[in-house]
Amino acid sequence: MNSMASGTSEVGNAFLKLLDKAFEDKSHKKIIGEEKLKIQQDRITTMDISSMTLDQVAYIEHKRVEILQKILEESSAR
Image (cartoon, rainbow, N blue to C red; front, side, top):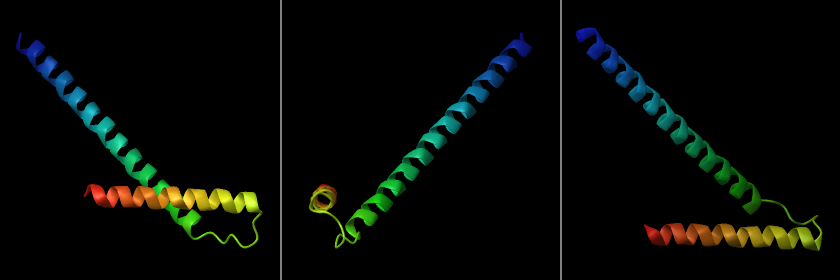
């Protein structure tokens, strides 16, 4: 009976380790996703639009406004 209890405990520990690993992976993915977004936002906000077509400029300007709105919303939520 003791061997069964220790086997159950081992399975439980293995399951907890698996959950910890999954949580860690999700956390890393979230952090990486946030960093990618920041890089994309930086690229858009610093992009040289002088040689773009009017449609491209309009798109970039629209994206810049979205980025600024998001920054303002995040800062007012703090």
